[in-house]
Length: 411
Image 1 (cartoon, rainbow, N blue to C red):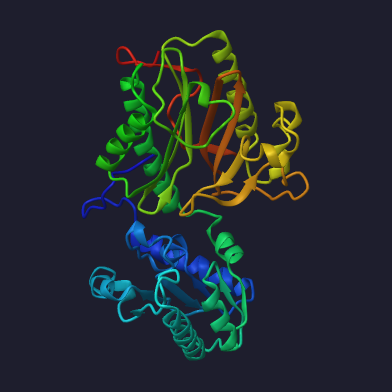
Image 2: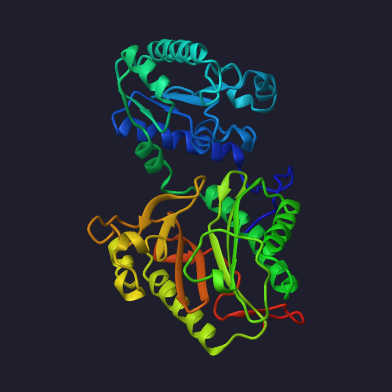
C-alpha cells in the first residue's frame, strides 16, 4: 500500500515523529550491544538516520558535517555554520544540540588549517565524550579523513569500525520505513510508465533518463542517485551506466533507478523493447525472470542467504571465469535509508557465509541474462513478512513490454 506523499492534519499517514524516535532508539541499542561508547558518523545517510537532519546533496562527499551519538544520550550535530540557524528553526528535536563543524572540506583548506582544525575538532569530541560519561570507551566511526582520525587517536580516543553497528541497526525496517520505501517505488513506476509510452526509434538513452527525471521530480523525488538506461548492443555485457546512444527499432532497453524519497531508496530495474521482440529477446527475458523468481519464491523468515544464492547460475555457467568477475549480475541486497544495506546475497560469498533472513527486512533482488547484443535485467523489491514476503514493486515484469505502448493496457 501507499498513502499520500504529504503528512496532513486530518489523517494518520507517515508518523515522522515515531520514525525519528525509532531510528534513534535502534542506533542507540545497537551501539550498546556492540560495546561502543559512542558513534561518530560522517555519512549523510547515517547522519539522517540518527539526527533526522539533511543538507543538500552537494555536501554528501565533502565530509563537512557529522553527528555524535553517545550511549543513552541525545545526539549532537556538527553542521556547516551558516546552516545552523535554519536547522534550529526547522528541526526542533535537535534544538540546542547543533554546533559548527570544524573541518577542511575534504582537505581543500590551507594545509596548516587542515591540521589545526583536525586537532581542534578532536578536542571537541573528547570533551563531549567526557561530558556524556563515555570517555575511554570505543568510538565507532563510519568513514573519516585521515588527519581527523589521527587527531582523535592523539586525544586518546579508541577509534573502531562503526559501520557494522550502523548497518545492523538499520537492517530491520519499521512500518514507516517500509511505507516510505514503497512511496519511493511508486514514483519510479510512474517514470517507467512514461518510458513505455514515449520510447521510439530516434530517442536517445540520455533523453529517456532526462524524461524520467522530469517525471520523478514532479512527483516529489528528493534526489536521484542514478537512472541507467542501457540499450541495443550496449546491453551485453552489462555496462552499468547510460550514454547518448540512439534507440533503434528492435532494441532491448533495461533501466536501473535509484530514487530517494524522504531519505528512502529504491533499486529498481525493468526491461523493455522498442517494437516487437524477437524470439531470442523473449528467451533472454524469460531466463532473467526465471532466475529472479526462483529467488523471490524462497524469501521468508529463517531462510538463509546461501539457500537463495544457490538457485542462481555459477559464474562459469554464464561465461565468466569466477564469481568475482560475475559479481552483481545475480544479486540481492537490503535497501532502506541506504541504497545497499545488510544482508547482501551473492554466490561470491553467501554460500560460505550465510546470513539469516528475518521479518521486516527489505530486499532488492536483481538478475541479468544476455545473448549476442541483447540483455535483460529485472529487479523487484520485497518486504519480508511473518510467513513469507510481500512484493513492493508493481510494474509488470511477467513479459517483455513493447514500446511505445499503444492503447491503455499493457501489450
